[in-house]
Image 1 (cartoon, rainbow, N blue to C red):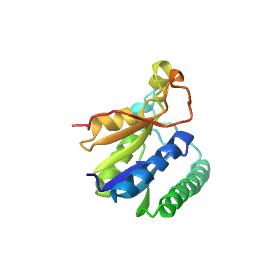
Image 2 (image 1 turned 30 degrees about the vertical axis):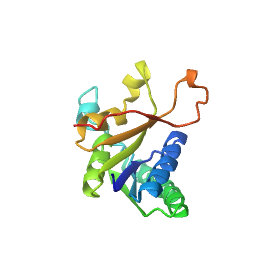
Image 3 (image 1 turned 180 degrees about the vertical axis):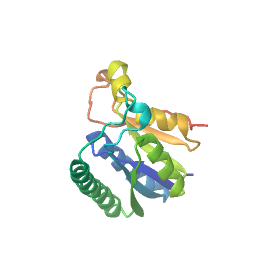
Image 4 (image 1 turned 45 degrees about the horizontal axis):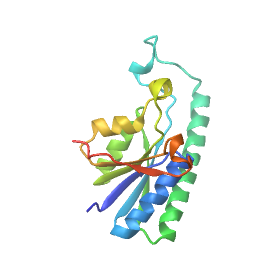
Length: 172
C-alpha cells in the first residue's frame, strides 16, 4: 500500500476536494502526506516564448508578484495542513519554484520520498486543454510514480461540484 502521498494544490475548489479525499485515504491507510504548491513563475521557459526572446519585466513587479505568490502558497498549505491535522493525519508542506509546473510536482515527489502522487484534473478538453495545458497529463506521462487522479464528473453525472475518482493506471 502507499505510505507517502504528494498532494499538489492550486487553491481551486477541485483541488480542495482532492485534499479532502487524500486526507481520508491517508487516515484509512496510515499514510503521510506532503502537500505541495508550485509557485507561479513570471519568467517563462525559453521554449514558451513564441517570438524566441524572453519577456523582460520590471524587477519590482517580479518581486511584488513573488511576495504575493509566497503568501498565497502559505495560506493554501496551512489550510491543507489544518484539514490533515483535524483528521489525525501526519503531514508536511512544501513549495517549489520551477518554470514548468509538472516538473516541479515530479521533483517534489522524488525529493520527499513519496510513493504516490494524488492530484486533481480539471478535465479540460479541446481548445481549453490545448491553450491551458494539462499539468496532470504531463505528470502522468513524465513520472515513474503511480498517480491517482480525481476529476470533476461531466454534466451527465449530475453534480458538477463533487470530485470523483477517474480510473488511471500507474504511469510506467
